[in-house]
Amino acid sequence: MKKLFFFGVLLIITSCATEKLNLSPLSNNFYSETKGSDSDRGAKKGFDINIKENVNASEISNLISTFPKFKNNGLNDEVTSLKYSLQNYLYAIDANNSSGKNRAVKSFEKSYKKIQKLRQKLDKDDDEVLNRYLVRLKTNISVIEDSLKGN
Image (cartoon, rainbow, N blue to C red):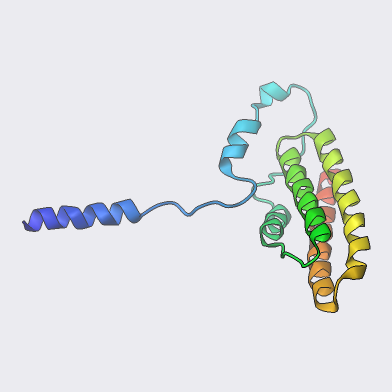
């Protein structure tokens, strides 16, 4: 009876020991599906940046997942578009896709400008929160772009 109890407790303990859930938009599954081998890329010039270990990319992923909701539905829709642009930006860098990266940057800038216009209708507190997020996003993108140009 003691052995049965011991194995039951052991089974419960080992079944509860699981890996932490990865909610990042840059999950490991995505990397394994999109990243080809170096021979697949041929002579195409890639980015010399490891996006999975880049602090700025990590900050962008964190901002995407924690972006607040606002009372203005039009603003929330544009924020969703901005977040998709940012995800595509990070995916394109990881996949060494410079044209995809450029499209994502243009899409980000377009959404950013629309959000700036919609900010005028926000109350002071919401505007300050939104501004903090936008400044952090732009700063991190600028640092990543600078590091890509430096390579």
